[in-house]
Figure (cartoon, rainbow, N blue to C red):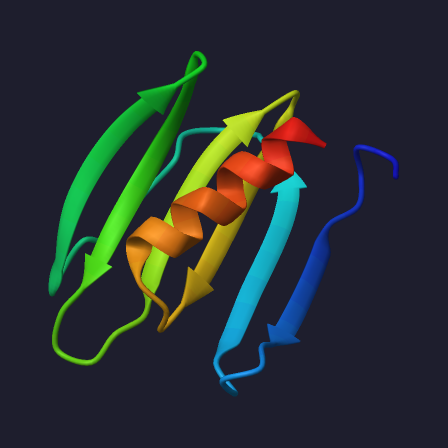
Length: 92
């Protein structure tokens, strides 16, 4: 994949929950709309994960930068599971 491309995948799990995964070149500042969400930051293995816990019926999100890319995971599933998925993606 070249650094000029982006990817968007939508996965439907066995419980019919959709999981959106997006990757883009990590350019510029990261702007996060945390309205109606609880915003947390966690650092694991020198990678900063921006975590948005949903409120008011919104999806949970995790955003992080790694190796020149910015990654997004969004879903109605719980934040802990999304973080496990993000960590798994970083191992590969």
